[in-house]
Image 1: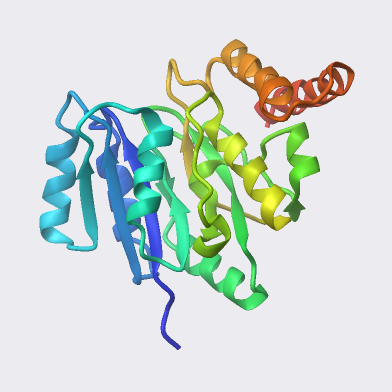
Image 2 (image 1 turned 60 degrees about the horizontal axis):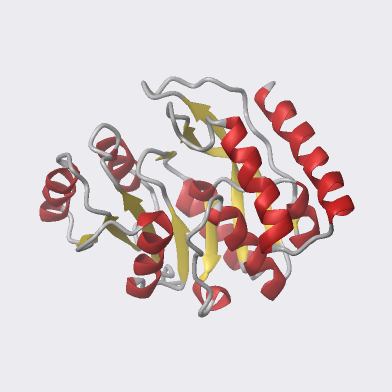
Length: 250
């Protein structure tokens, strides 16, 4: 049986320190029917030169250079427009996939006819050292559950392209969380695979590392994006805070 094409979308900006490891993790996948679309958001370092060196050796890697900096949401939207695959897999430019990630995920989704899935993961630091135990994921999540806490790390995810349709990323904080909320409003559940097939990098100054900034974005999503009332937002925010603390203890 022919393997379905997976379109991998990787936005990048000043990613020279990490992009080589990220691209190598794709090349080392056992699954071979993929295309990798790297969207450079006007990097000031040599990110583009590094990606171009890979693309000369592997034509399945394509670099799109944006004419102006538009942020990660815009870069991912450009990637979605360029994607040709049955499935969309997101991979941030500083994260790493383990070798069976695509094989396991495509097999799981094909066998069960799923629209969306995501993996467990480990956190790594800027030097690539593992700094957490396995961060597990639930068997499934829907819109209501995702309001409590975003359990989906973007680089662990894969989505049926037809399920995404014309849905696009919004240019706002926590755009990944909003994307999942909007997707699950359309198509129901996402399904977790509780195997750590991704290494998620924590970088100094990132939103994930800045807890106050992340908390502010969360409150804004509940109140402004999802239009949830004050009392319920306070309840959901408290669950988010507990879940965030618990995850950091793992």
